Image (cartoon, rainbow, N blue to C red; front, side, top):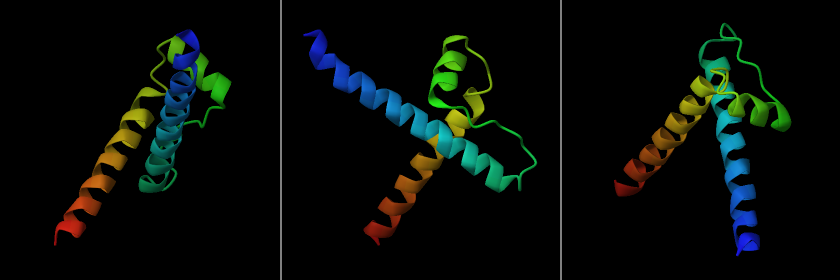
Length: 80
C-alpha cells in the first residue's frame, strides 16, 4: 500500500517544483529582472517549503496562475 503512494509523491514533488520554476521565470521576465527571486535547487526548495519561508510562496502562486491562464487561453481558442 505504501509503495503505491511513492510514485504519486514523486510526481507531486516534480510538478510542484516545475510550477515554482515557471513562477520564477514569469516574475523575472515580466519585471525585466527587477524582482530578484532565487531559483532554488530541489533540496533547497524542499527545505524552504518545510520552514514555511515566503521565498517560494509568490513564485509558486504565479506559476499556478500562469498555467491557469494558459489553459484558459487554449480552451478559448479551441472553442472559436
